[in-house]
Image 1 (cartoon, one colour):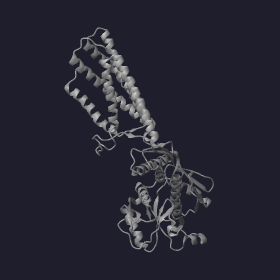
Image 2 (cartoon, rainbow, N blue to C red):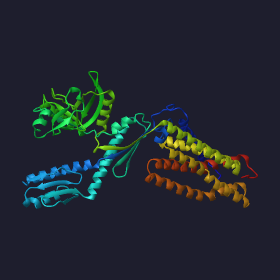
Image 3 (cartoon, one colour):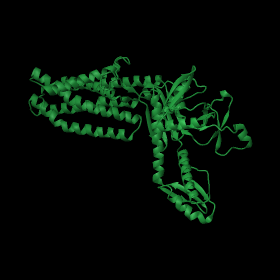
Image 4 (spheres, one colour):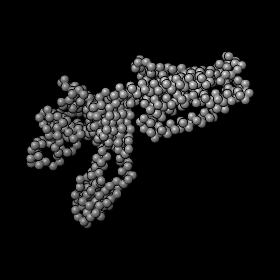
Length: 521
């Protein structure tokens, strides 16, 4: 066990050298060794929300609106088939509890029920008399909700990433909630504005027959609706527009803030299908207004003067530069499948984070000092070697977290402090075993060799069981618990290297160089 081949010794020293190189940027001013490469040194550990400050939000997805939309679409599909079979019916307003349709003739009820039963899989029928209620079964319901939450998570992640933040934490909580933590965000109100909007944009034609005021007085023309104006700078508070969506915002592939005539505007670009549709609509409707509707408000309604081909256009309005940036961000990231409500919002100041960092540093240093002193007093020279390995273990923890770009939180600091104590456990087991072997009359080299060999199984068992606990915490925990599990797992792995390989290399080098006749341990 004491014999080291040259390549093994070189490998241990190389790992230690790489640890120092990759951990060094954490002790230098930010950006000193900045690099874009993922394998070159220069990256620092990311500080979590509790250390760096930032914004915390708890969002609730309005799953009822998702169900209403699906049931509304399901009711339309059923009514289409009923019309083909000449079955007269009257729809009810779709709710989150099901799609309800009333059959006008009692003789048609059974046939209508059969049509409704086969309209879509994984549905169930209920209702009494002439009323038919179609609902999704439990499997389809769960799949629908899970898909809506997954889509919301992805859209939220894209929107937060567009803000240029570092290591945001975006996780599902419970059935329909999302937790968003953005470290280092200086403007939490902007995050609220970005995440609080559905950003569902569609294009509708403006009705030229009546104004919104006339329609309110005399009645809405068929197939029209009145929507408010998001910007009353043009003196128009409401628009009368066609209900039919001429081009969907789902066809947008890019959106960027730009300037036109010295004013901030938002440019957009459709995919091939959307561009062809947009060109066809603008070709056939010259002279009409084209309403751009975002979240139920008309943000702009320019007049179509000529065909707009190529699938490109701009959105004008009374935008500030920030508003143009945010609108283009929302359109690039895509619309949320359902509105979200902000249930909780917290801002953590960097001052609190600095206090936590200082308290964590003090605890780590104090624990390190006590452990170093204990090992030197208890084991002498061997304790010094164990302390060198302990310092290298801390350096390796910092290096691994820097390379992985792991986020360090306050519980993560607690994991590092715990690692300081655990890192010398293996050495304690080895050194006590060496003492025992020496008392049994073995020679110095044989006692050291037997100490390492005999303690190895115990060390492996202890560290593997702790590593399993860390993996379980990481798998089933969230937020701070994961931060603790990450640092604990990294610390266990690096401590195994430093305690078993590095200390053995130091002791082997000392024995080979000094050839001691007595072992004081």
